[in-house]
Image (cartoon, rainbow, N blue to C red; front, side):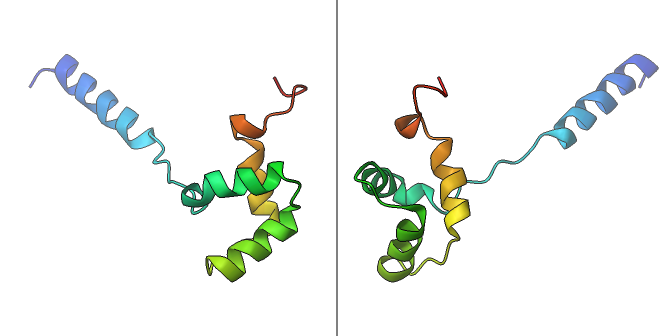
Length: 80
């Protein structure tokens, strides 16, 4: 194998190793209901309580806030 081909193979491998494996959030399956409840006026603490009692998921209100803030359905006009 010549040096140019070997260098290209090394760079390809390095680029593949740097790729980030994105995981889906545990909240994704409840997205529609969380958005609906939030738009109805539920607080993040209330959403956490709903997940704990109805779905048996223990998730901190801060995590729910971080998840919902990034969603386009709940984007405020100031964010756009």
